[in-house]
Length: 320
Image (cartoon, rainbow, N blue to C red):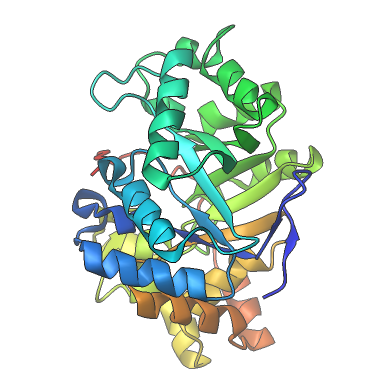
């Protein structure tokens, strides 16, 4: 798989990045569990394949995602050459404290779990869930500390990863991030991140678009997984998904391929983060990335209306 520059960072990454949140076993979010054995087999499939980019976070599975990745890395004797690992700083999950001291603590926890001395790409994660945004954005706060970590060489590049766009865009405008991660807000169903992507692209930030399947429904199907952005969906909410599925059936296109390539073909997007929770999903993702989508199918999908409403506005957030 070809590799492309990750913005201005000097890193080279594939246009697909695998996301490792589900590998930390997060049944409250995804509705199913992932055993340690299954996670290890999935990670080996990733490391043995052509994708050189993996994303995780300190709080995924309350640390299990990083711990399982670290175990896989140690079992292999280190990361494959040229592999880029992205992780995220997280608030204290009990107190929601997210000050400069917590930034240092979160990084130390990540380095210990992963068995690494530095992180290629380090994001500040989910500030909207912290106890006080001023701890993050104020002078000497978490964001200032994030950039210090880059200056000290503990992080090769730094980014911002979060959900709420009304909080995210002002922060992006105020700081010189190398990258950003947005999830569920630029899909076949939703274009909420469009303005933010325009701004970031104009600033030379690397845009990483996560969750192109809207939490899984565009990959597994509305009949199998009637959940949109990690929430149970009623018949009205599933109707736009079913319109996509009908077009794909008419043109013999897997909906997952259409959803993935919608993100991959956007010139603003550096890499698309696809969560996987079992080894066969790794190959399926690669197959979908290469699948042929007839022009008439692409036109029909592009003509469908897409909302710009925050897809998680009513989500009950559970970090497990």
